[in-house]
Image 1: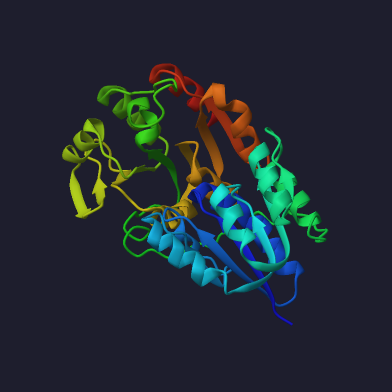
Image 2 (image 1 turned 45 degrees about the vertical axis):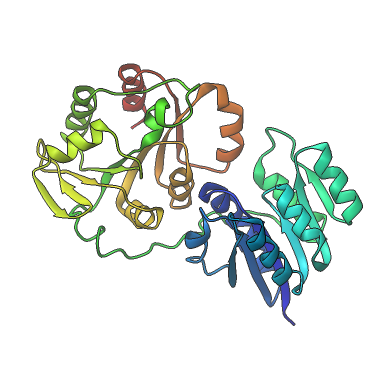
Length: 329
């Protein structure tokens, strides 16, 4: 007999990734489970690539009329279980309108706890610092699903002919050099890494003496990245560049997350500021050198407790940061 299950994850790709082990557990535990997920615009396309989701819906970010249309369409559906893993007010309100035997929400404040009490939704309070897998396990227990969440190898490698075959290395150190390295394009109160062109190229050249290197950028550009591209020896396609100063360094410019995931297949080390790519690498058990803000250490810890091959370095000026990174590689 089919059991219809609805998941709310209307936030970021990283949040979607850390929920996948829980969803995979539900899928394995409940025979005939049909799992639907409501996502954000940010993680909608990525969620569609997972076989654990039978149906994927995008929560409308636009005007109120589209939201009303979405709500009207959804309240006609029936679900056996509803899990609100994102802890959003909008998700709790929509869930309150759904026909479901069991509803469980993550709550983060008194207002949400009150909503749940009047809407008949069970809730699990998200205590700051709690391991997220423990939080999710408690949410499942409130729906009478007593299981262990331990399947963290939930990603499948996806073939990508445009990138994976162009980079001619069996393995490499993967440096994800995105906007998070600069506080001006990330969180302005964070310590600024802000490498100069000379500092960054010296670092890459030093790494490349003993390793193949793949540099991937974020979706935002900056003067340093643009200069790297101008100095590249060869443009292999609109996004892939061969670095001029070393034969064993390639640059991939503005890849999407769907592009990045298969590139992890050959990575022996990922050097990156903390984000969704960190969680993807952890699923593949790749060595991770994770650059984090020290003031957010407790928050980052709860997202990384399950990672096995994980090394953390704190954000600081590039010169000191590189010394710490080199000790972890």
